[in-house]
Image (cartoon, rainbow, N blue to C red; front, side):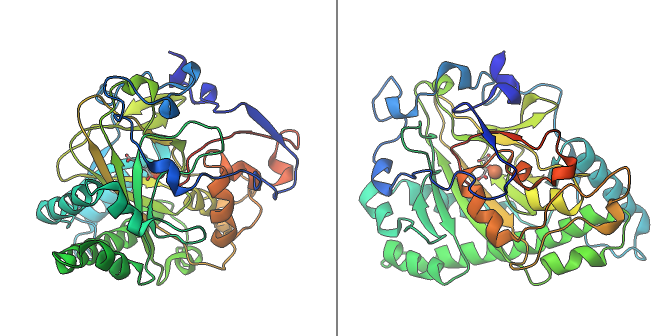
Length: 394
Ligand SMILES: O=C(O)CCC(=O)C(=O)O
Ligand SMILES: [Fe+2]
């Protein structure tokens, strides 16, 4: 099964990059919103050509092809216990999370404090938004240079489009503005209320999770804290319409996330796949559970002890899938460097310093193996980095 190996999942051939950190695909041309017009199923029983992947890139693992190889499911009820209060439960949680981070780079959590009622309210708004007529959605289309708005995973000129739509939110007043444009006559308040409630909860939860994650490293946490003190995050709604020939298309290309940590809610359809030891593994959705994955910047802070997991989303023939991703983002303007206690003669510092501001821009042009652009020359094999060019941006 060729596509199961990540190494064979090269989109447009292999690029060879010079040692320089910069110039990594800045010339890529991105499509504009006009290319959103139709979705995967718009042609009836066959998939529209713009979504058809070359044969060698097609996903062979179906959305619901689950096996016994499953990502860990972790009960996080003890997440906010004080160590003094219930040391045993908390220590057990730290140990489970550590194992999951070392072996998988991701896990699912249950018994968190985001209620199923709130999750279904969010799903209601997600469905309502994406089912609006195209012209309505275009009222809030993402403009060049802004983070927030409606769009789809950016694609290079001439490349095939992922079969999904997206709506990005930013903490810059645009949520209220967009809500007004869309819902001025009906449930604007309900939308903003549900959005804010979810944002606050998932933001808090991510803050607690990241502390549990770094506790498992058994190093002085002070180095880490500046990266997430008063930090914020971004929410993204993803929408994957049913696709008449799902085996020919992809919902979101293989990528890693740019940030510290992502918390993902999905409906009960299935489609998320993660890469484990060169093979794709389908993640089984569990009602009420949230999926958590390590992002690139946490990989750097841990000097690659914890890895940012490559993942993708596949589509299916009959059901619409939605997901809501929360990206916990490090504070801007600070160099991201590994914890000194995780660097020694056996594990030299692998990365050149960078800020999240720079990284985010580069990530837009290359979404898989992006960190290889920042490998220190003394840790590279031969001074030349091999990357797979990708077409999706997170
Ligand atoms: O929808 C999913 O399962 C994955 C979404 C994702 O990876 C992303 O938005 O970065
Ligand atoms: Fe992602």
